[in-house]
Length: 274
Image 1 (tube, rainbow, N blue to C red):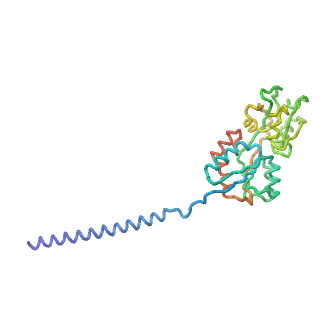
Image 2 (cartoon, one colour):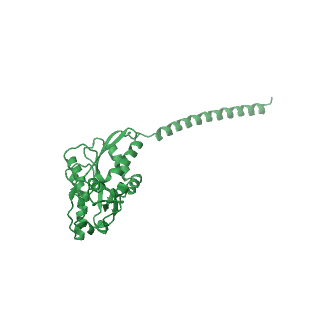
Image 3 (cartoon, rainbow, N blue to C red):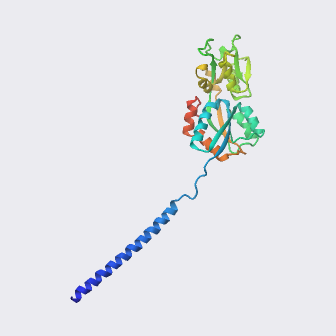
């Protein structure tokens, strides 16, 4: 074998060994890089899972829509339960300031929410999430041919209003004052559902309630619009309460209410967007 052949063979072997070494180093480097990349992409911490009971104090007019949202919330967050106390906003506000345990408050007017904020019972500024407008609820078929707010002043009609300290009653008074009308109802009810029930049970011929309540009642009543209602639209604020037992879940419920999903449920019930 000639010297040139032996030299060529040694050169080829050295090149092969060098290539193998380079491949090994490259593989190690790749493994280290991959491992490092995996560590950096891993989340530092995961969001805590929501659980437990969320106690919601909400205006009576929110009953149907909030019940639907509560069911959706429980499905989206297994292990949670949403409980509601529905009623007149003024009564609910008094309960909260009196120490009743609750996580959040959804009121039918800024005025009733102010009772809670003035007492220092909210942990953040309330936010308006929907609005609501008044409507006249009559017996099915509107047998008394009620077509205006003025018609409710007829002496032979039994008309029911919400108490003036309740948002729907305050709004009705504002509409009556704007039109210069005087109305003497047969009763003042402590929440809008109670006023509507009087008509459903035929204990009254008409009641001034919210559009949402007329819609929720279906064929049990008939609704009559009146132009003065545009001057008495109520904003609905919602707020997390200061000593909320389940603040994390309560914040998530408020987020649901304000989300596109929540707004679809609320506007579907007849509420107006804020």
